[in-house]
Length: 349
Image (cartoon, rainbow, N blue to C red; front, side, top):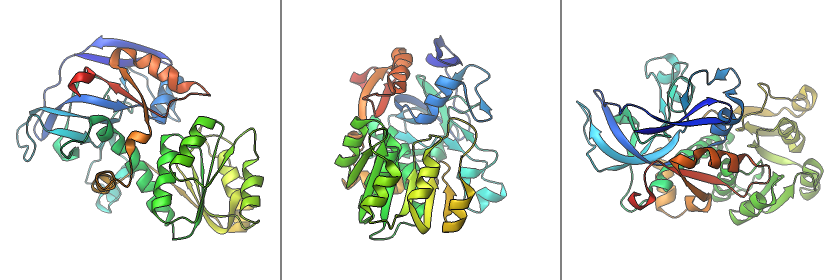
């Protein structure tokens, strides 16, 4: 089978690799749709995220859905032909944090597309059956793949404890930021402000529920938000840009006692914050790590028409054009939101 493997920054090869055999409790999935994520882009462009280094040829991709090709011994409830979304995390299930209900921060977690665990930019992969979520009849596989993105956003919103009529800002409106905008609107935020340098993404934010948008480099994010809130500031700020300047901007936008939820991945292995402003305001700072126990809720949101994941899916590429897809996504003024890679022909999706 074919796999797109990262050998060095911006160096992908399309290799023939062995077809995996599903072990006990595992399912062989024929991958139908893989969403490219900002963390994938970090590995593609830089070869690492912080101290996590893609030292060996690595198959990226952790947002994916497909069709059950075969089931291993001991698997119940899944059958050949079932269409499934896949939770990319395999926590140990035995450590203290797992037993406390926080598998997303399990120190021993294996995560698709994160060294040393190969991800989904290939035709077939074997994965634990308990991490598969059967898709409802009629749900497209690209929607199934994007459930992971929605799950990350739902987890971040849970951390914020957003209340009815809160004022909220989302700094950075790629796919994660856009879905946070949508969830904040559904949760009853009174006002939602969005900042980003890309005007195409700001237009998408308005379509998903932002009340006001500020183009970085044209407007002044902090000054504009403070003016628009009458000097009060925000109750909650979601940092989803992964830029060096946005965490501090978020702090400065918050009212005393406000909450900052850090979702983005900074280009350097640090989060730049001035301690004085954070301390004076008594800001609560939370770091959002992936997601936990949210797939049933993401499915409910999509099935009931409360979230339309097709609104963030803008481009489709075959597996053999994965490098072009990454370069498309990496452009500063890209028109791409969520790019989906199809390891098999789209007529089969």
